[in-house]
Image (cartoon, rainbow, N blue to C red; front, side, top):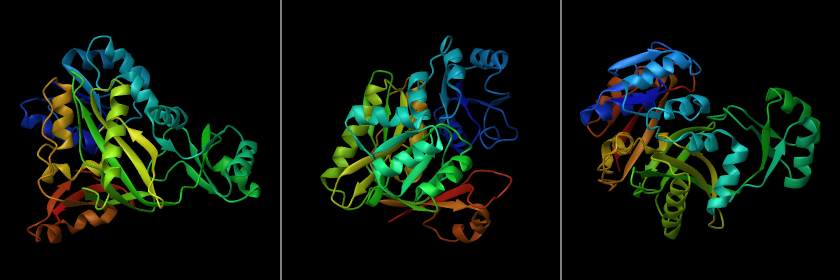
Length: 346
């Protein structure tokens, strides 16, 4: 039995991929109903700090993974006392705090954006001096899809920005003059073997991933460098499972690491139809102790996210014989919410 912490669409697609390998999935999530729970063999509905529920969950599964990185580290540490947890708690913790994450990525060998630690409005003012104007101030924890960040142009905006972030511990980042955004997903098995999917290009709208092109066109030698550094990062974390790293490509041809996620990634959804092994099957293989699958690209492809009410266009999408549609079973379509995606060969 594969245990999955988290009930979202990444857990849903992991559970479906595990079923193809003959494994049942048991989902642990605080909300019900949830997309992953609808396709799982079993579901535990409890908070992540419920020690009794976590123990019962542990007793029912053979190994545990996560479908999002903000599962409390303490939950994973408790489960690790009795079951393999893949990723490990230390890898999860490194991805949960942007300050720790930046230090780790730099230690691996990535270049990162210049940063300034922010614990007050005065720190934002100082960042504008040390990093230049403007800066992007981001909470160290829990931000995603543009949430938990504010652009600050001048010292006069510092107090309002600090309040908008809830006065939470944050970092300020200097702006990067980038030409494109790319990412790499690496997989690592229990014996330490690593396989990387090719670098892909990601196109964002309003801070939300909209389109992925796989492989990233015209990357040249940078593609190999991005894959090499991602492989080094997953090995350094001693992480069994998946690690995705998002990067900027600057106009002068440098790679700048942005952030990482020790789980399946939106930019890997194209693998469901156009890679020899999907990222979700790859995760199930790694977590359950199987050999990694082939990461070969079957055909260059495009992935497109369906946001909010766009999911209601599914009949028209299915009228295109080249479209491979994946809906997540979410019951409420809110603006900007990821309701599904489709893949198509290029």
